[in-house]
Each structure stands twice: as C-alpha cells, then as structure tokens.
Length: 265
Image (tube, rainbow, N blue to C red; front, side):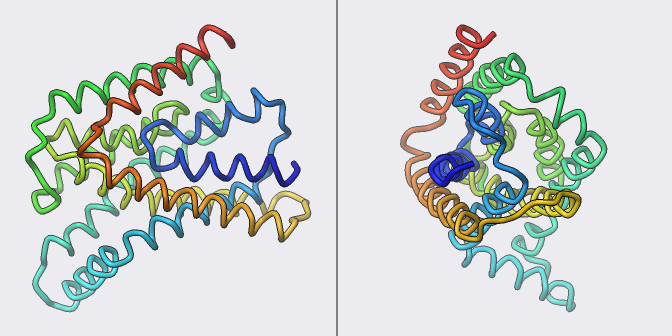
C-alpha cells in the first residue's frame, strides 16, 4: 500500500477510534470500497500506537492522578474514588479481553460483512440516540460504582462486531446508567487504553508469524497521523459533547448504514 493510502487510513483510524461511529467498520469498508490492498499487521500496530499515545497524552494529568491514587492505596493509603477508578477500568476490560481471545476467528471473518456493518451501524446508532434522549445524565465520575464498571464492560463485548463502535456502546451504556455525557465519554476514553494495548499486543503476536518488510518512514507516518488526528478528535468531542449531544453521530451512522444497504447489499 502506498504512502497516500496509508495516510488516509491512518487519519480515518485516528478520527473514528474515539467517535461513536465505529472505527472497525470504517477500516473494513474503506479499503473494500476504494479497492485498496490490505495494509498489513505492521501498520495496524502503528495506528494503534498512535491512537493510544494520543489518549494517554490528552488525559495524562488524570491518568497520573489515578495511578498514584491506586499505588498509594496498595501501600495502605486511603482508597479514594481515583484508586477505585483504576480497578473499574481493569474490571470493565476483562469481558472484552476474554471474548476477543475466544472468538477472534469468528470476529475476523464472519462478522466482517457489509450487511452486518450496515445493520449494526443503524441499530446501535438509534440506541445511542435513545439513551441520550432518555438518560437522566445526573451522575458524574465520582458516582461510578463496581456495578457500573461490570455493566459497561459487559456491553463492550458487542463492540467486537464491526459497526457497533466500542466508544459508542460504552457511552450508550453510561448514559443508560444515568451518567452525564462528559463522564460517559471520559470513562469510554479511559477504557480505550487497555483495549488498544490488548489489540496491539495481539497484532504483534500475529505479526511475528508473518515474513514481511516494514518501511520505517511509512510506519512512523502512520503513528504520527493516527496520533495527531486522534488527539484533535478527542479535543473536539470533549469540548462539544454537552453542546451537540449524540445526534450528529447518530445521523451519520444511520446515513452510513442506509448508504451501504442501498449501494453494496
């Protein structure tokens, strides 16, 4: 794949990873629609590195505070809400990690289907809209409990299906549980860190089974492009989420699904 195609895929990865519109669906559909060859595992790894660096850098102060609180609690200090939040992130990641391990082959083959992507894009987009409209939006990060982490983690399994959207389903669940939009988005972004780490780790494992050459310039370009676009996307989303709500993303998802049903089914 040439530099231009890799650049476009990197930007798409960075933009869609954190918006509730499904990055996996776009990364499946774009090469198929454009007729591009598969970019290969090396550049998937590079894209994941870029997006993970972006979310860590953006939330660096929060993450340092959470890790320090957790470390202090392990040493006998007070168990604060930040310390609990660290455990909630881990607990919410376990279900999708286990499901991904056991159902990887099905996910990588059967679910990469245009009809499935179109259907899930529309259905889960409407569910996101419903949760945004009917959710009480009164709970904040300080009210997050173990039960919430378990429920959000369990629904995150659905995001293994292209078109569902990991950020979309975690925000949907957060809104259903009564959290405000900002808290739902922040917790979703926190959860992306271990999920991206696991996905990247699995890709590295698979990569060692391949014989391939890496273009270091292309690799660094993918890391930089996906990271920069992801950082600006997080900034845009966090800044505007209370003002715009979820409706713009719901409209996009429905239009994407209808487009796929009309022209590619």
